[in-house]
Length: 307
Image (cartoon, rainbow, N blue to C red; front, side, top):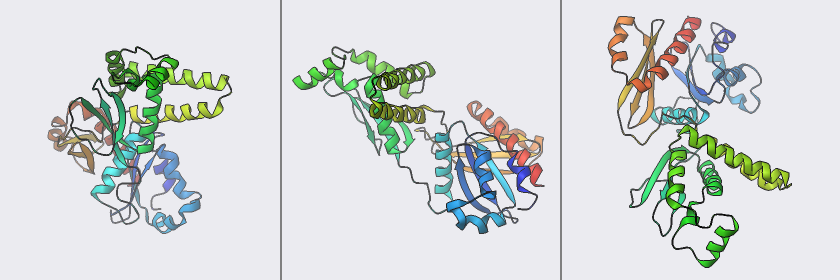
């Protein structure tokens, strides 16, 4: 690699994110995502293992660009959005492998409950949360939430057997309004509610382990991980259909992130003076300014080490 891979790799944060490789002519070769950017990118210059087909690409890499994200879920969404917008020659699948889904909360008294849906269809008495990447994770998260916040058990139309089951689980007479309120807070990722839900599920896991019910403990552990996935910070794909650019500037580099239809799907960076960047920075929504500035700083460091 021109200019030496180690210098660029050590500039990458130990954080989730998306990386992009370019060749000497500036063409994008590959876009990938990482739970830890530094170690993932470094792996291309160590043992490729089952990725030996990428060796010719690695030999052509002249520069590395990266966007640091706030969670692996956010990085997964950003990779998907970018690949759907443009597929570089060394990427195989536009959009990645996970299926986008929503969690639907039916609030009708007769049959309240949570379900996982591929599409968001407005309906009376129902609210939608998401979107999330990965139907399996979403279903696991719903299963975990049903253990601690049993919305179906609060329904007015329970059969005798369902009432007996609710009573056996200690949920008989649960307050539907209270359950709905806490569930909504968890799914809106309110920190106190999320922390409470995690603590309750960890308590169930510990109780199962203490009773030597290791299969149940493993199932709850997977549900805890799934809940972490759906409640982690994630702003790059939303149900908001807004269109705008979020820009950051640092060290002579202007980073532009294009949000279209509620999805961050455009990413560019270029040399720019501070005065030239000023109008773009002024137009950036306040909620995006920190994210854009942080990644402009990263872009400037990587560009400086590539020069």
